[in-house]
Length: 507
Image (cartoon, rainbow, N blue to C red):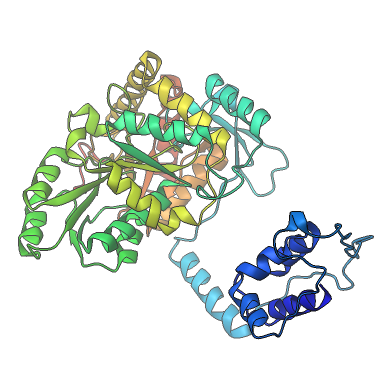
């Protein structure tokens, strides 16, 4: 036994054996199953054949049940954890690295596109208010009304949704415990994928940690597997652009919602090559809406698959909240739909829905899924609850209230002479056209008027198209809108920003 153990340890130390690690060796010694490894391991078997390893006569290779009495495994005992002798202090990077990094930050500050994060503590009982510190020297939080949240319908604090999350946490803990393929799939995940597939009228659905990951993973995986040309709308989200670029397949960008330009590009494409046309249903910054039916028909004319991001539409549009395609009766024309759980549904995570084989390919080959920890069971349980609520009468009533709120806000802003971008969706963008003034608008509204709306600057929008992006929820009242108008009047006057009648800027 001693010679066998010694040789095994040498094999491990020299990394000759692909199966026998130090952990496996410890287990083998403890369970007296070392003989099984010796017989099955190619490294150990070869050593035995060559006579390098000689088993003691008392050790029977027929099986551990017939071996001698079990030997006690003695392991070193750790009596205490020693504190580190040296304090773990942050060390600066080498000067050349710091110089390049600081130069980039300073450039962002000079062109007023440097980003800061406003710290908010949203108040569940007082939607759409949050607690925030509106000035650097402020010592206590105060109420701020939020006008840019993507929790469009307030589902993040719906009592049935939070109840489902809390109940699941109490039963199963806060984490999934692993990736989808290694311990991170519960019946909650399976139920959620079935619910999403049913919502969109597809065979299957697949969950991701976010819709950024869903778009990136799906487009790069399908692009490579299909060896496809990919046609992308100029206004597409960064996640779609990343997936297309990561696929390393031929990419063609068509002008935003421009059918003629798309057809021109498709006609020039390789007729024998697979194709994917990727676009969004609702564009979240400018509020524009895609001509879904026309784009899908054109794509299918050239035998291309359609990939449609419905992130800012799911929950908000359609009889069941399945998105703009459902509302327009076009859901069946979409080959692959992507959506999020992090906006109208009030949680976190993303997904795609499509045919069984397509979903199976992304599930099997998509690195963004394979190597990412699964969303928690509690999130999946809360999402199922939220989707079911918004698919029923309560959801339809919320959508009607939401529609009334954003239409009223748009009318009030236009009547007051503010430059509202012409768009038909729930997004209400107010054109500024200057990065510094957009940031000053945001800061003044927060510090002076206790209103929070985020300035949208480059690279989220092109330079010269800087804006304030307003979102009215079912919980914003007409009185709150009137206060917002008066605050904007004050800011517009102080910053010498122009007003205009019947403003329209083509997107």
